[in-house]
Image (cartoon, rainbow, N blue to C red; front, side, top):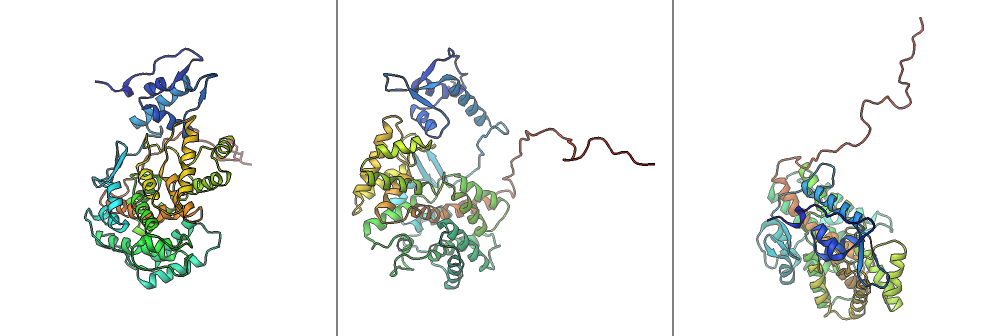
Length: 431
């Protein structure tokens, strides 16, 4: 039996536009995925006069079909996905799993530190907490305090990681035991190096409790701490995201664990990755200020931007991480206005494109309702994902060195070419 991917695109009459169902059949995907392509700018859609459904240009759909087929075949230079063997995370059927166990169930039932240990070792360590040597924390804090007040959270975390590395003479020991020891001290060092907002912040206990006082000046309540701890656990890994791939490239070259984490932090800072929740946070505050999502969404689209916080390329439906966080936020005092604003955003965009909420929107509801700055989501994301990066670093150390070396598909001018600014003819030599 052949799948829809095996069929050649059917010819279409010039100028004819496709319905959503026809576009989905041609692409071999679900209708929800077609709308996800629209949100990512891979397809354009329009509504016909008097109609409610979206239509698509046949040539554009056929071009995307050919591109997807090239990517699936792994044609050099076609943008095909890099496949990496891993036993850490599986994303399948609108769910994701950490070492075969439902990641959402793990995150709800276990602390971030316990989930991190599971990712690293495949063993649970009930009640585990991470701590860092006082001298390492002091060095990291001094390095972070030297930065400009305009430094981003990721700037601070990257500097803290570098400072901690310089303080560790055993950083080049890549044995599993040494890397695990590094991981258990690096993550609390990153948190402790961040400037506190509350004067009564704690530097002991669960990591989420220590992080809270560095994100907001408000007193912590149990429901909010549970949301933060669960968010950290949910975000600990998500297969080969861009930052994780960078980490594996560094580990493939046998960079030490601090350097591998630093590589991940460098990629994470992009607005399409870890910093995405900050964009949603600001949009959410605008909706709360306006009292409705309609003008805010209109301004986003008028500026040529996609609406942040909606849709995910790996989930046709709602992001499972968003779903569990929204459920927990129902119990957080003061979160109701931000929750209603988020629902308004989803409902307003659904009039045209039925996209679902992703984890960035849920994280923004949490940060906005907790009195945190727009950058808080980026901090949560970076601290959380460090656990996954360490897991991938350990796994990559067990592979052949330098295997992350794809070949470039050269499309420039063919050599040999003359040197720039040089005549092609050799100058005459005077006799």
